[in-house]
Each structure stands twice: as structure tokens, then as C-alpha cells.
Amino acid sequence: MRQFVVIGLGRFGFSVAKTLSEKGHQVLGIDIDEDKVQDISEIVTQAVCADATDEKALKAIGLENVDVAVVGMGDNKESSILTTLILKEMGIKEIVAKAVTEDHRKVLQKVGATKVVSPERDMGIRVANGLVSPTVIEHIELSEDSSIVELIPPTEYINKSLKDIDIRKRYGLNIIAIKKKMKIVTKEGEVKEEHKINVAPEPGDMIRDKDMLIVVGTNEHIEAFKKRR
Image (tube, rainbow, N blue to C red; front, side, top):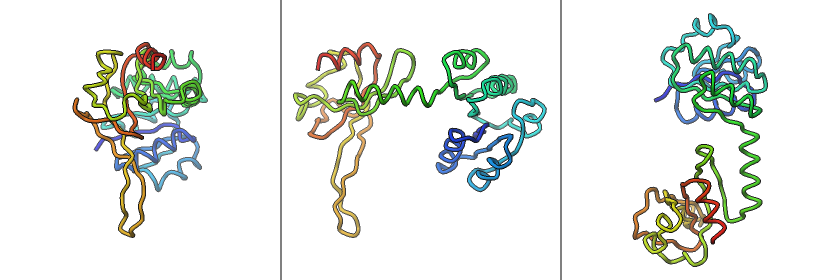
């Protein structure tokens, strides 16, 4: 079980802290706003009202055993940058920080954030990719030049094996999973459809109608694949 601290309990920080807690992790929530601390106090392991830009205050809370720190107060750029710097100096190895602009992102990376997220920017990219590439269901950036995409396979791939299509050789992409839509019968006798994911599929696994492919590769190769489909 990993231990997390989420600093800044606005909509972004609250959502992160709540989700981590629901997944069974120990979560410490910190915010300077007493109302926000109170709102999350019964959801996370511990909630503390403190000024995260105050190094003495953070050290007094005791973050020695924290595995990951999430800095969620992106709207206050100065506070998020200073807090990230303090956490870095405290020896926390993994720091995820929220940025609101590209310049903000660059500064956070320079002062010690190991990962910087921009929720609005990232969502905008996903929406745009969905509009220009309707066969792409999901697009997740891994870095500036590589991504994971979930896409609807071309018609000519249906009823063929991964070995037959060999997109690794043809396009430089790797299929890391196949998402299959399957019908199940509930205890009440009701028929429902749900997705089952075949992780690390074998070369002989077949692609069926309504399957979706989860592919990883460089953005250049992904774009080339979409154009040549």
C-alpha cells in the first residue's frame, strides 16, 4: 500500500485524493482552507489545515514516509512552485504537480516535479483527437513524442490474428491489449454487455468485430498509421 499526500484540495486535488482513498491507499490531504479540509476529512486517512508554502509547517506534519506527493493548487502558480521546491528538498522522490500554463509547467519541472499534468490542456487534446480521428476512442500522452491510443481496428483486421496484421513490423507500433465487448448474464438473469481486457495478447489472438486495440508507440508512427488506414 502506497502513501500519498495531496496538497491543495480544490476540484482537482479533491478528486485525486478521493480516488486514491477509494482504491485503498493511505492519503493525507492538506489545504490552507479549513472548509476544504473538513469536506474531505471523512474520506481520506488524515486531513490537515496548513500552509504548504511554509517549510516548517510541512516538516511538522511529517511526510517522511510519503511515497508520492500531489501538488494540486495549480491556479496559484507561486504557491505550487514553492511547495514543489520544498517537497523536493524534503526528499520526496515522486512529485506530481498541476500546471495551468506551459511556462508554469516548465518551471515546475525545473524545481523538481517528476510529472506535470495540465487537466484542461490534456482534456482539450483528447477532445481534439477524437474530433479529427473518430476511430480513436482514447489518447493518452506518455511523453512529448509517444502515446497510448485506444482505437477501432480497420475492417480488414477483423477475424485476423495479431501475427497476420503485424502492425509492429508495418507501422512500428505495439498492441499492448485488446478490449473485447462481451455479453454476460447477471444473477438476476439479465443480459448485459461489458468490456474484458486481454492484457499482453499473444500473436495468435484473433481480432473480432467490436474489439478495440490499445496501442503504444511514437506519435509519428501513430499518425502515420491513422493516415494509411
